Length: 257
Image (tube, rainbow, N blue to C red; front, side):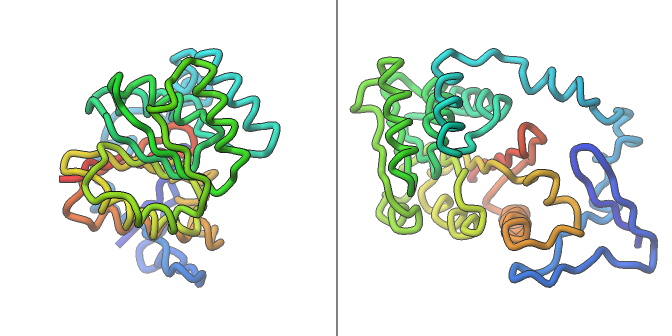
């Protein structure tokens, strides 16, 4: 069977009789998409052309960021943090607003950029629990939240390793969990997120296209393979309804049934 491998800008065709390359990294083989599975995802079937760089940029910058978010991004750059992109940030706001999120966990603070986006959509009494191993990032997040008068009672900033902190949080107590931290630990974060989420809650994972590496079987580094393994686990989990959005560096969104 022929296979199609997809990324936001290209398709790779693997001729019949040949298999997609099987990586040898510690996370196993790439999850190729067969032509049967691709179905309506192909441009010919949808009648849609690939978005141009101009169209992608237009969509990514469609909603203007607040000055607080701009300032938080600048702070993040100053010490090497990489927060969610503008398109992903506005998507977080929409998702939080859509479910009226009151209890949210983020793994990786992005110096407050993602937190500001979540607060913009959360209920007025909503509480954000932000876990980040870097105290400097959490301090920047605190400054970002304080700058827009978000009261301290609405956020818990925990500086620590996520796999130490998350198991201490309550089962089924959260409306939304955002994962944007160490890619090598995405599989473990997924396990914790599913435990933390209530039925109807949202799982959101950033960087799932990982600089165009995820869809290209030539990339077999451990971070890429970890992301692929995580995505495969999500696809195979019957308790999740999922989609992979090509905004920013890829944003996986799942609803827990």
